[in-house]
Amino acid sequence: MKHSRIVITGVGLTAPNGNSLPEFRKNLLDGVAGIERREIRYMGSQLAGVCHYDPLKYQKKKEVRVGTRAGSISIYCAREALADSGVAWDAVAKDRVGIYIGCTEHGNVETENEIHNISKFNYDTKFWSHYHNPRTVANNPAGEASLNLGVTGPAYTIGAACAAGNMGLIHATQMLRLGEVDFAICGGVSESIHTFGIFAGFKSQNALATHEDPKKASRPFDLARNGIVISEGGCLYTLERLEDAQARGAKIYAEIAGYHVNSDASDYVLPNPVRQAECVRAALKRAGLEPRDIHIVNTHATATPLGDIQECEAIRAVFGAGCPDTFINNTKSYIGHAMGAAGALELAGNLPSFDDLTVHPSINVDNLDPQCAIPGLVLNQPRRVAKVDTILNNSFGMLGINSTLIVRRFVP
Amino acid sequence: MTKDETKKVVLDIIADIAPDEDLSNVKPDVRLRDQLQLDSMDFLDIVMELRKRHGIEVPEADYQQLASLDSCAEYLTPKFNALAAKG
Image (cartoon, rainbow over all chains, first blue to last red; front, side, top):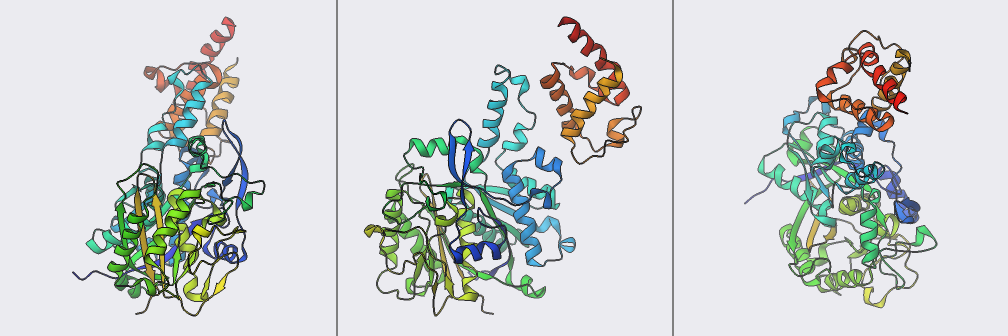
């Protein structure tokens, strides 16, 4: 079956260390992390990746008040992506646009806020907000973007834990190929730093990072890593069929080369390197590529003691000594774990490598864990390389969902 | 509480729930929805804020009494005063 070629034509993002792709990329090359201390309800000061975009750039004050943080991030990223794409938005048929946004979770923030609110009124539910349901429905982030943009095509979220960012792009690719839509806005968002439950949950799991220097706290592959830094963020792309992008003379960042999604079916939280490796191999097969053809592998590694080792085991199984041109990095070392946005943000941070032939490093590795010492790991300093034609992005999530997305340099 | 004070209370609430609106020239005798961008959820906000901030209950059957600033003042001022009298 011959598929349409799908290309990335625009990127909009907000990360803890940047509110545009150029700013984000510069900080990834300069080793600038974006983690800070933040007061978390019931828990006091915690480490978190906080975004500092201006919500009022694209929303009215009332939209910000009525909506959710995830909705606001979605709107910001979608508008930025559209502007970056150069599409004549007014002329686009809005019923042929799809919005597909990956989320790790949605609704915790507003539910916690409302319980806190009624706790001040002796838990009388007549003080519970009438906005609770529209704020907490699972499609909220995509729905708010559709309202803001006037998109009347399908707009919904994809719940896939921390594999969700890749899933937004994968789903959009599928929908464009099926002819369901002609233009897609897709990726992932996270508002997770606004829910204490995620912090408390990871803390109870002994998986929440601590460090006296916030910017050193997220340290995948380092021997002293001690857990996850929770972050908010978002990254949405515009995806189009190649012929449509070329017809309007669009700038093309990359072409979707392959992808795969599978499930571990083995544990609620523990990763499964065998299934992860299967996922990577299946994505390579779909792309018609061999492991040695991949030039950058962006890892999912979240800096948990076990999870990093298991992903390295999966990578070692696929990319071994026969891959001299394959370099491996990690973005969470700068921005923490942006949950549903992670995969989408981490791919974006690597896209400029097609142009600058530089692999951004994984930072904060003072003592490399020998069990994470995989060939090609780029640590602490950017690495100039001879060739970047392909990028493979891994994102894995709880309940054992794995996603791998491969993009290639666009060659007509 | 005077009717003008009641109008101020309602305007303060509207300022919070409709922060993009210019409230400097709200006509008291004109329906709020005819001069401000307020929808049904916003009116529920007014009801909720009266409850939260002032302990005032507005039953659903009386929502129409909140149509304009003048009608708000007519309807709410006795409620505020009854509440104050209770101490």
